[in-house]
Amino acid sequence: MNATSQAITPELASKIAHLAFLFRSEFSGSTVDLSPWLTDEQTQSQLDPYSIDMSFYLPKHLKVLACQYVLMQVHFSEYLFLPTCQLQTIDVCGYMFTKQQWQFSTEDWTFVGLSTPKIKCQVQFKNLINHIFQLFKHPNQVNTSE
Image 1 (spheres, rainbow, N blue to C red):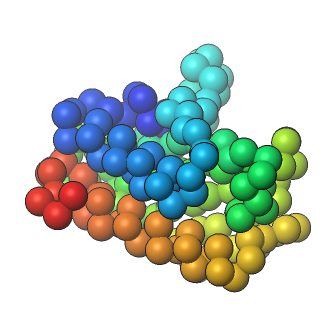
Image 2 (cartoon, rainbow, N blue to C red):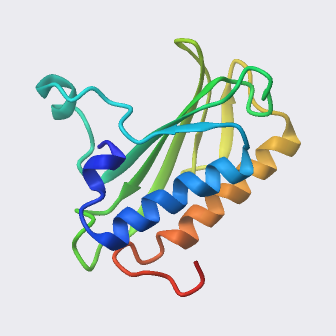
């Protein structure tokens, strides 16, 4: 679901904003879209109600991720407002215009696709993903380490 739709508590809103900040600080010059999906009924019916979805646009001169657009889906075990909710996986796809260049999942922690980022950038990206896991270790609590 669009990240804007999942910011249902102050804690979640803060964590979503921090996730966007983490990405932008790692890949400076990028811009965030907290609502990458259309809001029509057909699109919304196909979305995971237990995920936070956002996208990032990378400037043309920033070629570190071998794409211009990144779609990130952070999947949880259940509705985010439930106290037992836990982060399960993170799936990310990189696109050049409308063509997918690569995909990444924490199911296997590998990049696959036509044009994947260089190894140095993959390590940088995986480091970012680890920070996201720490951020959402307890989705409904504000981390004192943030």
